[in-house]
Amino acid sequence: MVIKVMEEDKYRIGDLARKARVTVRTVRYYESLNLIKPTHRSEGGQRYYSEKDLVYLKRILELKELDFTLEEIKKIINLKEEDSSGVKRRNELLHQYRKKLSTVIDKKVALEAQIDSINWHIRQLESNIDFRECPGKDCKSCQFKEDCRFAQDDYPDF
Image (tube, rainbow, N blue to C red):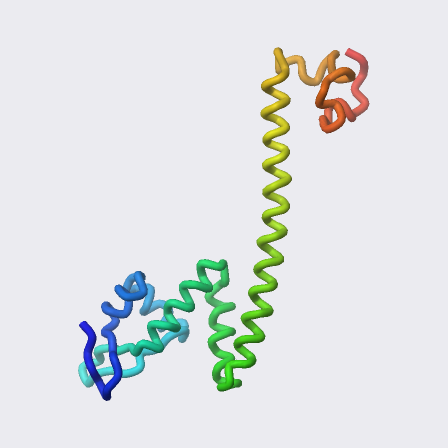
């Protein structure tokens, strides 16, 4: 339920959670970490959040999807206390995005190498009539000898 308080839309905690597609527990957890805080509390202690809070919550979720830790997110959010212009936050975000991109590219390269290795093993097993003979007497003439660690090792002639 959206409540008008001082001419600005305010959301109760459940409404905020629903709009952000998270649980109330998640909102409370982020609140306990000082990632978000209610804009207003009623006399009865009811929390109310603004559109700005919803944007912050969605930004937190977006950064989590990009594999940012809550500690990294908190560091970025807390920069608003040092610099109201947003320049420090922007620069830190750019730095962190570049760091994440580098990490993901490294993982991609490693995954591609693993895919190639698995495909090689599939081809090798599919072409070998009796895989129990590998390594064996046919190593020196095997079509896979250039990439096979058994053919490259100094095994005695079988």
